[in-house]
Image (cartoon, rainbow, N blue to C red; front, side, top):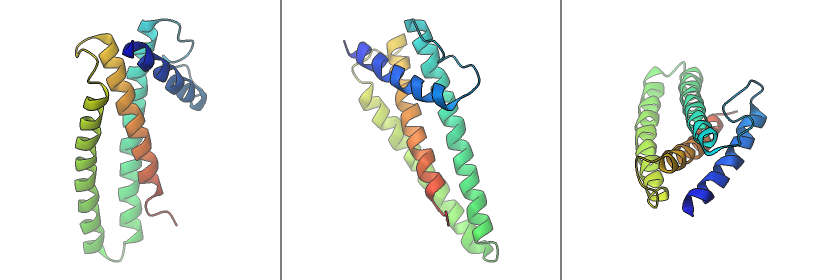
Length: 134
C-alpha cells in the first residue's frame, strides 16, 4: 500500500521534472512500474547534479563577493562545506525515516529512496541559490 503512495508521489515529481526539461527523459510517458523506477533514478541524478552546481556557484559567489578579503572568503567557504556535509547526513537520515516501511533492496524502496533524495536535494539547491544574492 505504501508503495502505491510513493509511486503517486513519484509521478507528481516526474511531471515537474518533465515540464522543466525540454529533452527526452526517462520520465516521459511513464506507464509502468519499471519506467517509474527509472524516472526516480533519473530525478535523483538530476537533483544531485543541480545540488553540486548550486554549491559550486555559491562558492564562486562567496569568493567573488569577498575578493578583497581572502581569509574571510576561505573561512566562509569552510563553513559552507561543513554545513553541506552535515546537511547531507541529515538528508540521508530523513530519507531513512521516510523509506522505513519499504524493504531495502526492492524496486519500491529504491524508487522511494531516490524520490526522497531528489526532493531534498532540489530544496537544498534552491536554498543555496538564495544565499549571497544581491
